[in-house]
Image 1: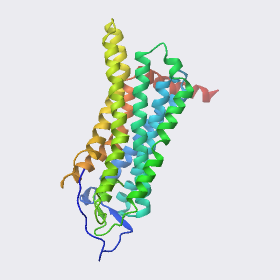
Image 2: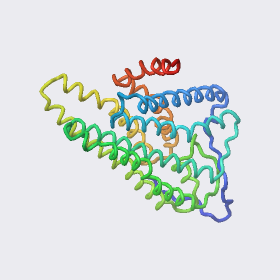
Image 3: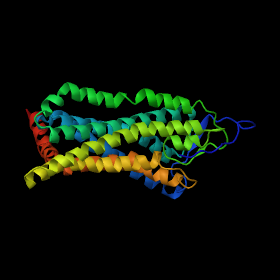
Image 4: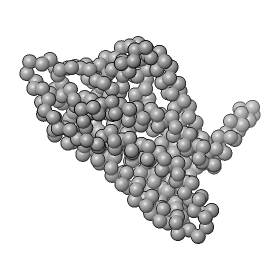
Length: 320
């Protein structure tokens, strides 16, 4: 966390709009980047959309694990739809100006959906913990009502805090340069444009990030610590392999998401950290949603089986 005193308000024009530079430093690559990100957006929508649909429609995937996976895929679609369309518009039209209200709105959605992802990944870890460590009690503990409550809590619990944090940040006066070296609306870049001392604001950002990132991450670590302890006690190597295979996909996603999120929001800031923040943000907001369907489908026999039979089943139902 960085504490620095900003320029005082006096004799400076207060800002009401900003310029997100996106990839303005590579003007010769604008069309190429537009095509690349448009393709990425289509892949994300199709990949996560298919996972969401098969977890809702396939009778063999009506279990808590796939209920959570379906919601996770829907979350990824929402997450990327908050940032990528504006970026595509910017690359296509070269208009990079964004109003203060629009910046605050996008930032609030990004933060809220990011909190939802942290909670949902923790819920998925708890689901695997109950399934492996208490298999006889699993149908009772993870009943449909509890699953719906856990998912609903994940979606809505971050909303009031993130709205409050957004309002608190945008109650600050902004002055000086209106250029933001980022491709979506995030907290660290906007705080650099605030006038006066922002120590309390930075402390609040750090506290909220610790609450929404570290607490779910620690819960996941505890869950997997107990899972590993239980699995290692299984007498059969086949049973151990099967148990680990049900968790491997989730562990990969957890490591990628929380690793980049912690590095972005909880590491000490330096003068040259802007470029690193951009790369990390690009990774967990755009790159990960591309690979999540691949991680979950190619490493999951049930999902692969549902994907193979799904088109044929729906074609036959259409013929009838």
